[in-house]
Image 1: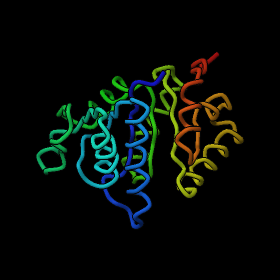
Image 2 (image 1 turned 135 degrees about the vertical axis):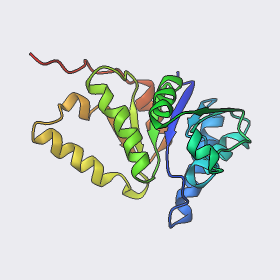
Image 3 (image 1 turned 120 degrees about the vertical axis):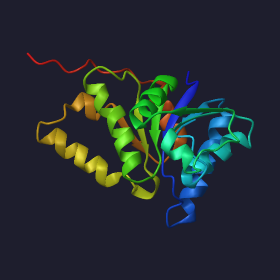
Image 4 (image 1 turned 120 degrees about the horizontal axis):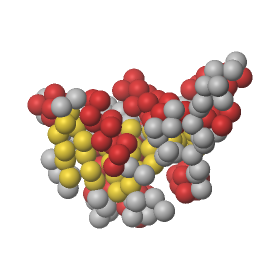
Amino acid sequence: MINSLAVYCGARDGNDQKYLTAARQLGEWMAAHQIDLVYGGGQFGLMGAVANGVLDNGGTVHGIITETLASRGAAYKKIQDLKIVPDMDHRKEKMMAMADRMLALPGGIGTLEEISQAASWITIGENPKPVAFYNQDGFYSPLEQVLKRMSHEGFLEKIYLDSMYFSDDFDQILDFMEHYHAPKYRTYE
């Protein structure tokens, strides 16, 4: 059973309303499934949309934001639990510790960096939790192809490739996460 989900996503709206709509729908879906949101604590972009989707439907939101971003006015003070941490390393560590699972919505380089760390830590045994990508309109399809190429070329074992899931259906993502078993960490023999 999933109690909390770390959601990594853009702090910007994107160029199409569909991204905000999907982020809000994820929040609504999480509240309906009684899954707490763990996210970067921001009030803007997809981050604010997913938080509002959870909050407006009676769910719980845990935000972790850096001192720098909070000082710039990015923090969403409406959420129930807002933690301010010194830097991004602390934020990523706290989010991974608080969440049962990790999901990336569309976003920019920060979103990619945070979800990539969660995925890469699976290989070394420091993240036993599943990583999924909400592949809205093929947003993450190029990344999925790069990962498959890494595997094909011998840089990423198939068990780690299979530990990441790409889908545009929240119910399929939930099913993957509920049945996930962490692969054995990489050894060097």
